[in-house]
Image (tube, rainbow over all chains, first blue to last red):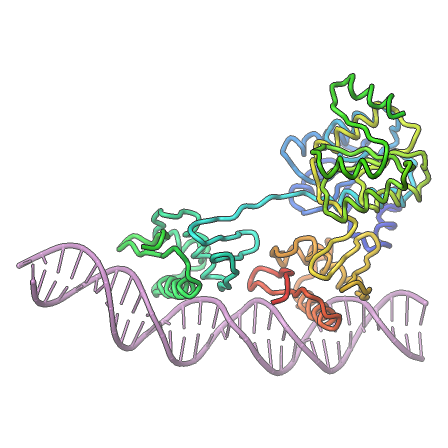
Length: 213
Length: 213
DNA sequence: AGCCAAAGATTGCGGCTACATTACATGCAG
DNA sequence: CTGCATGTAATGTAGCCGCAATCTTTGGCT
């Protein structure tokens, strides 16, 4: 059945991966980024609903459709109440399955993200957008990282090593004033955009962002 | 039937309101704050799916379960593709309906919509059609997948690995700039069709789709 | 208060590299 | 056999970013 299903999905250009066991599915769900999980109840290494319960226990947000031969009302109720989002009993029409998958995929896992606000600055870590007084200001990658790092702790000192680590991950970035140069360029842009915040140096320690004097 | 359903819900301490017409339901959905909307297709003043379409058009996020005597596969597919979240054919067991309502409620409001809209772009994941300013533009499979993936997160950065995974599932597609080539071809088509959105590169990270400057 | 050394600020320059684009080859489908 | 889709590779290009030279500021010390 899996083969037939994969074939039908492939024909419609729906990308799908297939594994046979709960253990494998668990790994895939953890590692991969899938729009929907289709799950059979009877599996070689156990009951599919246990995986549903386990995933939901871990707050895994992936929509799950349970697919099974156990079609009684009680089974369906159990399936849905275990945390699945839909439940389809065999035999089923492939078109209906596809439509239900689309419905689940449409909905997707919803992640709400947060802005970092301070003064008239607004940083969106999800999109790397920075707004100054409501208008978008472009910052190149490294400058953005510096500014985001500072915005995570407004009014607080961020040490020089912290900043370097935030911007350069692991690459050894020794011997140069590259960081200072970035700060300088950021300041110029902030000034141009009339930001109400400023970046101040703390001698021998690092930098901080705060309301403009 | 409405009376029986209300009675069953009331007995389980589920709060529910009931109206008879699409017009009334529209008002209620607009004004009230409901966890789930249960909708019949045949209604005194029209087809229930029209209300679904109208609500989704307005980005109304309420989960919708369509309940109807029209139980053929085609009807179910239509129901789900109109933007509903679940579809249950009569006759049904009250317990199953309740379980499905719980599943919908658990998941909470959605922005589910048949189309992914952004700018003057409109993507229909069900048919793989892409409209630019209302007119259909043909995209080959790979290009479509890239664009759909970007449209799922407008204004958000989609990492290069994410895009590769979305387009190539498992087949490791390393060592080539195939993705870049697709992006380039998509851009050309979008330009030709006068789209109001553009695809921007985020150096070392990935791409994002956003309103044209 | 004045001086000096060290830290920080600023800026032009140039190289590097990721990205963009195009042409071409391959392969599959009708 | 023809046409389109798509991967590959070659080439072009922009702009980021590090460097270093120079200027400014700071704070400690006498």
